[in-house]
Length: 94
Image (tube, rainbow, N blue to C red; front, side, top):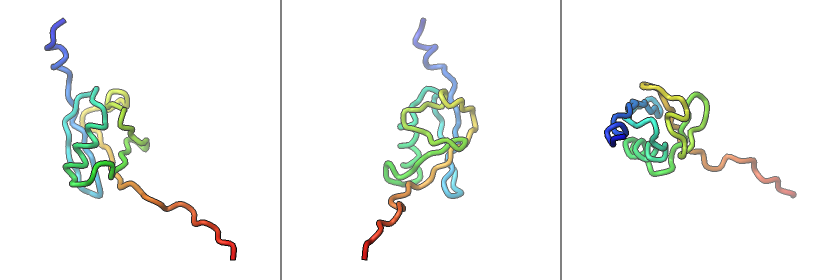
């Protein structure tokens, strides 16, 4: 088995959408999303960990890969800002 077979794996173009802006990233099917997330946050000029990513109404985890999620060339991932707080207010006894 040669090393070339490893390098010839098809690449996917994934579209990442955030508030109407879209970028396209070219990835290998077995690439961990942690690396893809970092590239997207940099291209959108956001701090690391700013976004949560969703594909087909499912949260994408950093250890997932496009192959594990059955992604195909041209699929779209939505990037949403992480919500901080927003839990119920504490009840005050007066």
